[in-house]
Image (cartoon, rainbow, N blue to C red):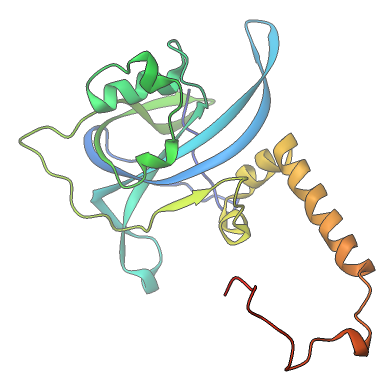
Length: 221
């Protein structure tokens, strides 16, 4: 699947291309996008998507003067599946340098990838008159190479523990993609129900308030 080049402001801003070739990298971000509808060979299907982002510690640039040098980064989106034909499983097998056993593939926690180093092959491809940096392949870090220490903090956005600060920091196209998923819809519905519950909750009567003599021995703290 092609990498989506990010444009964080419109206008004539163009993001610098990542140099092509081998790049040592480290996974630092995992974004659970949710279930999206897509068409493949004329058929429409729903697939859960996850987006992995890698920092390139040998490609430092000054994006904002106040932050100094920071690593360039590149992302790739996968269908969240460990089926033997799934792109994610093939990518991970290239990364680890060996195939998954069927037991290993039954359930894989993608968040385990955070902080893990690898070697990426970066290629430049053209689409609609624009050139993009894409991840062509992945491999373990070779013995004669080393990956510098991680620079960016690990970042994970999952619907199980949704972090609104991370969501609000995402590019608009990613926010829109997530907002169109049923997972995001259920999250919003749950928040609305919680707000209604708080709004309709009846305050305790003064005589029902606990006093200093009440027994707190059963409290969990």
